[in-house]
Image (cartoon, rainbow, N blue to C red; front, side, top):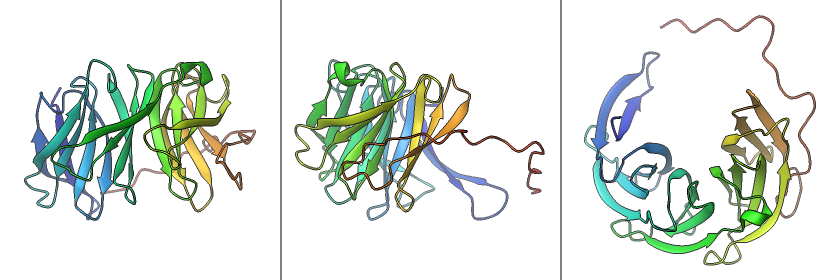
Length: 232
């Protein structure tokens, strides 16, 4: 394992390596990253280190460590994913080993601080694996690897005490739900489901709380003739 955040330039058709910051202490088992466009910082979850680490990439050839919040005893055991709230300077972290959605304040990037958690595994938050943030509704969408769900958590009302709003679960389409991305223009979630061997499209639509109600059936499938690979 390299325990690194690496910067890659995709300006040209052939991607090129730019630089890295590596640390077994703060980036052990680096698993996911969220980007702060205003301050050129990246928030990296480090699963083995039990940390959320802030890396400055203003000079992409020489990224530098800014600060970390680590808690392998309780709030941040085996974090796997992060989503950044640029308005409130908060990072929402899926802590897989804790069964928590953990909120971290990064307004002081050199010293990130714990804010609160949502940890009611009885409400389907079993094995949180991915997280996406919906700024319009002030909610976090959390995918759960153990309970096959997308769980919607209210983080806008009170970040110190996030609350459960609802969930959509499916052992068919969300089996071992993993990574998630949110398209705000279409109010749609895209969920990588490991054991389903597929990408689930989850419609949030005009739900005022953000709780999804449906997964389109049939789900998207590959065309019979795969697209040709791009030539570099």
